[in-house]
Image (cartoon, rainbow, N blue to C red; front, top):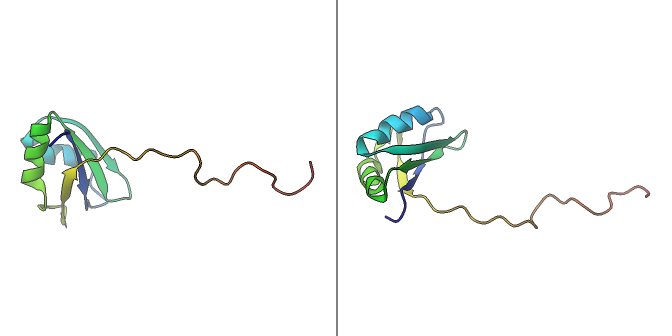
Length: 96
């Protein structure tokens, strides 16, 4: 594994950062946890890629809070374009 950051999917919406920290702690140092509220996923950063691999191997497909966890190496976020959506600018009707 090239990174120490893991994607944790299929979470129950009630899972807290504290619960994820407690779940991952036996597998190494937990540096950071982010639960994306209302989305059913989050991210856990372990102390090293080796610890992340150990946590993934131990916890992937395990049941937690009534759901089967999906754990994988976190991918870097996709770059955002400054040109998408928003529809701003230009005339909006009326007179100038």
